[in-house]
Length: 387
Image (cartoon, rainbow, N blue to C red; front, side, top):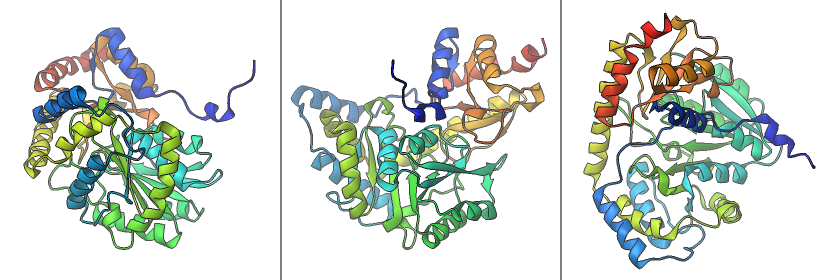
C-alpha cells in the first residue's frame, strides 16, 4: 500500500489524551486532560436548550454568526482595550485548536520558521509541522519558567515568520510580565514577525499577576494574531467554540483557511453562547476567585504530600518535580502513578523540546471533593515509591 505522509513521523498522537485513556483504564482521578468538572452557567444552559428547540439548525455564516461575532467583539473590546469590528477583525472557529491551526496556516509558508517557547502545549509543534513550517524552540527555564532575552534574540536572528505565545502558559502556569511582552514585541517588530497568541486562560490569573494582551501593546495589533476560545472561561470545552482576532488583512486570509478546514462552528451553539459572552463583569471576578481557592487548596494538598512544585501564576496547571523519586522515565512513572496511586498526570517530557524527564503536570479544575480525594491519594505517593 502507499506510504502515509512523511510529516506524520515528526510528532506523536496527543500524550494528554492518551493519559486520559490510562486514567480510565485504572479508574484513576484524571488530572491530566484539562477540562473542568463544572457545567456552563445555568443561563447559558437555558439558552442552549432554547437554541436546540428553535434553532438555527443550518449553517451559520462561515466565519461566525453575526450575533456571536458582535457579542464577542463587545466582550473582547472591553478586556483587550482596543476597537474591534466584528465584520473584519473576527473569525469564529471550532475551538482554539482550530484557531491556532488557522492562524499558523494563515501566517506561514512552507519552510518558514516559527519560534515556540518550551515547555509548550503539544499542539504547537504539530501545527507548525502540518503547516510545513520549521519550529525553533526557545527554553523557558524551570522552575520560574523565565526566558533568556539573549536566547530569544538568537532565535529571532534566524528570521522566523512568527512566534507562538501561550499566555497564561500551559503547562507551566506562567503569566508573562509586561516587560517580557515588550521584549517579545520589540523583537517581532525588529525582525518583522507575527505573534500568534493562545490566550485561552486569559481570565484565570492569580493576584498580583495580571494578563496583558499582546495585541494591545503599541504598534502590535497589526502583527498579532490572537487566538482563544470559550472553553475554559465558561466550562464548555465540548462546545468547541473558538476564535481568531486580528487585523483586517490577516482575517481575510484566515477566513479562507477556516472555510476549507471546517466550514464553520455549530450554529445553535453560537446562538446560545451569546448569553455567555454577555454575562456581567462580576462573572469574571467570581471565576478568578473560584480558581484562586482551588489553586490554594490543591497546593496545600501537595504541601501535605511533601511534593515540590512551581506555584502557578495563571491557568489551572501545576508542574510537580519528581526528581526526588529518581524518575528517569516520566512516561512510565505517570502510568505507574495512575495504576498504583490512582491519580493520572501528564509526563512533562511531552511539553519540552529539551530532555526534561523529572516533571509531571497536574490540573486542578476539579470539584473540591475530587481535589480532597486526590490529596489523600498523593499522601501515599512517597511510601509507595519506596516499596
